[in-house]
Image (cartoon, rainbow, N blue to C red; front, side, top):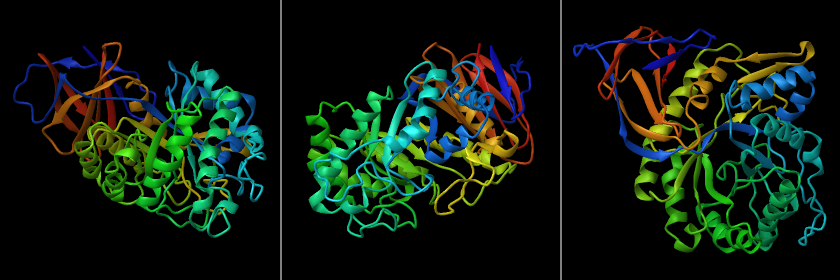
Length: 438
C-alpha cells in the first residue's frame, strides 16, 4: 500500500486506489530488486550570510527555521551540509583564518570569525538534528598573501611556495571545528576553480588540482591522522566534469586520496557527464555540492522548485550520492553578499517583521529529503512518458519512496506499478508527489 504526499501546501495524504488496469495511458514502473548507489543525504550550506540573518531573528523564528530543515521527524531531516573555509561571496566581507602575511607556520591561525555566527548556527542545527552533520568544508580562496594576485578576489593562483602551508590550513580548520563539537566530513580542493570572480576565488588548472592533492593535501591529511576525511575535486559545473575528473583520476597517486568529484548546475544540464564519470570510474563518488537560483530573491516564482526537483531527479538517476543546496537562509533581498551577488534561497527572512518566507523550492526539496533517508539505495524506476520524471529509493527501514514530477500544464494519469501492485494515480499539472510504501 502506498501513501501520496502531494503539493507545496500541507495537504493531507491519501491512500491511492488499487487498480488492475493494464491499459493505462501511462505507467511508472519500479523494480526494488535492482539497486544502484547508496545515498549519503541531502542538505544545504551554512554561510556567514545565512548565520547572521538567522541571528537577527527572534528565538522563536530561529527555532522554527532549524526545525524546518533539521528535525528528522517533522522537518526536512537534513544531514549533509556545507561550510566555507575563509570567506565566500555570501560572507560579510573578505577574511582568512591565517591572515598574517608570511606566517607559514600558521601560528596566527584561528576561527574567531566563525565563532561569531557560523558555529553557533551549526551547533544549534546539530542539536535539532540529534546528531553531528556530515559537513563538507570548501574554500573559495586561500589567504591573499598565498596568492599570485595578492588578493582573495579576482581569481589568481595559489603560489607554489605556499602549497604545503595551505594544505596545513585544512588540518588546522578541521581540528579547530572538531574542538567546537563540529566534525568535518569532507573537504573540496577549491570552489569553482575555473571562475575568476569579483568575489573570493582562486584558479586551479586540472593539473594544479591533481598535483596539490597528490603532493600536499592528501599526504598532509594522512600525516595528521585525518585520512578518513573525504577529498572532493572539481566542485564546479557539470560541463567540464569529465575532463577534470580524467586528469585527476588518471594519476593513480592523486586518485588514491580522492573520494569523488563535486559539481554545480550553473552552466547547462550535462546530466550525461555525471553518468560518464561514474561509468569511467565507478569506484569514485559523485556529489552535487551547490545550486541556487541566481539574480536576486525571486520571491514566489514557481519555476524555482521545479528547477530543483528536475536536477535532483536527474542527478540521482545518474549515480549522484548526495545533493547540497546553497544558502540555507537569506534576507528578503537575497543577501547579504559583500559584492552584491544576490541569489534566492528556499527560505528568506523579513528580519524587520520577524517573518520566514518559505519559497516553493523548500517544499520541493522536502519531497526528497523527508522521505529518502541516508543509507537508502536507488532502485530501478522508469516511466513510459518523458513528461513523467521520476526516481525511487529503498530506505534502510524497508520502505520504498517514489518521487514523480510533472512540469507540464496538464494533469497526468498513470499506473504506479511495483511488483504485483498497481495503483491508479493522478499527478496534477505543475506538481510533484512522493509515494511512500506504508
